[in-house]
Image (tube, rainbow, N blue to C red; front, top):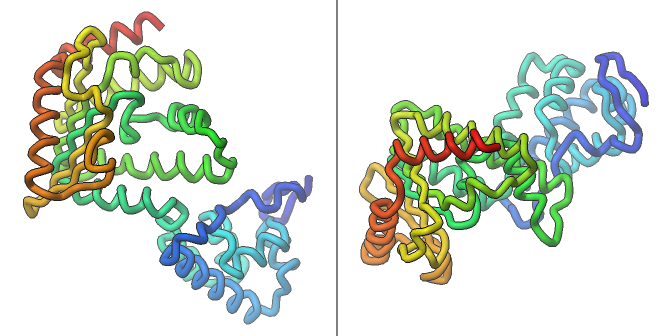
Length: 292
């Protein structure tokens, strides 16, 4: 373990850790990363610094410097901050953080986040796990760790970070109307262990008390509802358009046909009517939390 002039500690074997892998199938994201890398290389060379010396000054390995500059690795914010300081770029390099902020997440997650950011109303019924917008970081990580084949640590970290970034939807002003119906069993399954489970239940109570959020619980005994085929999700936009998805129909693909959307909204309406009311649901979650 070594310590650089900025106080950063680096293990030689961990030199590649401060960054994210570039998805080769994400052409637009790869183009952004390549452009940022070229700018970093040009500024480093203009400063008369070799890659090894530059890496030592910012606290990272030479190999990582080459990977970032060749567009093979997405630099983390702290990498760009240190590079800005060492190269005396007066904030121009640090400003690139905005360019790479989104592309560090998988494209399909970015596309979903863009839709959620535009939505004025969200309807979500989940049958096996809590919606990503409701998850704590610890819960999300534990849930993603169950995937097989197992995600790499890099992919796991990116997936958790992307899921948490989507939760900026709760900070929008004015906030969209968000409706979630959860199966009782998803509240009782201790994903991540007891403490992770308790924090997750607490998060549900916190979010469920927001004025623009409705959380309802579907009791296990009500098995005859319209959600037995799997998830139902609908996002509505202020221009009157909408997009939806369900597990058991339309091939699981996104749909925007008014006729098909009416089917999903009909099902969701029945599910909401059969679930506990929002007030009853919060009391139910409080009871589950009290038992843990």
